[in-house]
Amino acid sequence: MKILVRSTNWLGDAVMSTPALLRLREKFPRAHIAILAAEKLRELWLNHPAVNETISFAPGESVFSIGKRLRRWGERPREPDLARQNVDAARGDARPTGFDVALVLPNSPRSALEVFLAGIPQRIGYARPWRNFLLTQAVAPRAGAVKMRKRSAAEIRQIVAQPEIQIANRKSQIANPLAHQIFEYLHLAAVLGANPGPLAPQLFVMPEEVDAVKEKFGLGKIDRPVIGLNPGAEYGPAKRWPVEKFIAAAKEIQQRTNCVWLLFGGKGDAAVTSQIASQLPTSNFQLLNLSGQTSLRELMSLLKLCRVLLTNDSGPMHVAAALGTPVVVPFGSTSPELTGPGLPGDGRNRLLKSDAPCSPCFLRECPVDFRCMNGIGVEQVVEAVISAVC
View (cartoon, rainbow, N blue to C red):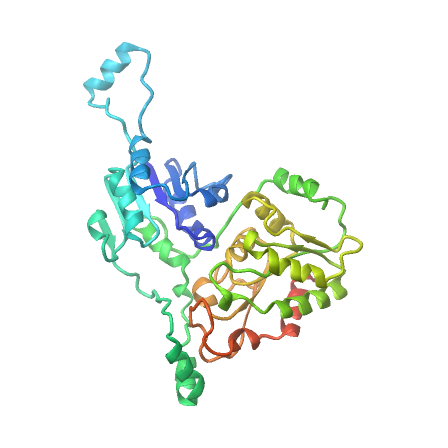
């Protein structure tokens, strides 16, 4: 059996889909499972036991190009033995054979169109507008699914201003552990007979990869705790704990643990990581600013090396937890019940929230006073990191 899984486009979502991939491998141990993913996520799947192959596409590559490449994926090299060719033709097997089934994890019309143009005979994904006719099985919404509804600015101001609405809002907070996003992907895999039961996201790096980053970044002889700090978040500023609080927490943690800080981030986070680095001691090798300097595999190996990661709700948060590194995360505009790291209830991770009545709002920017993040104190974060280190 040849299964194509169309990956999600965000790093964190891709990590949350790994339980579904592992369940597929459990159900089909001899299947050829390929991942179709954006080039930026290609390295995520290296050495993953659920995946035989990664097919990546470049930024801006057209849906028609992707469909054509997938159609040609199953083309067989012709045997030099003419007798064998004649046998294949007699069996009706001379035509190229491709994927048997496609599991489409994103909800976009484009992702469904890619596998439709590839001519894959069985195409499974969630029912959504403008794409159901492209699928052979449009799956109805899962029982227990919770939609991440964005609040309007007017709604947020109303919640903040009226105590009675605040009380009602708190009573409506998400309490069902099966609401988490990993169960959305597990539910799709279950259409193919896979076990939909809970399973933690898992990623894998090889020991030689960890040794390589130690050598490259001069970490081989460190005998102190290595702690990661990831102050960015691609989605927007509403997901970012204030940089001043990160600096204050990092200073206190460094003083109490004598740790080595590894600062993580993409190229777009260079300004904030530089600001943090400028405020922390750099003597005696106490800090290494790696923002924009690592490949995805190097980031994974470095996160595996960390005792704990202090981070915003972000892709690296999910990566660290899936590698077994505990994470400490201030949550503001988003919901740990829906997209928190690891398996819901994992005691290794510390997920911190304030009592802001308007959280989660799922907005990129706060329309009021950013009370969800400002309400999470420095000492609260420090104690969470210290407890994870010890």
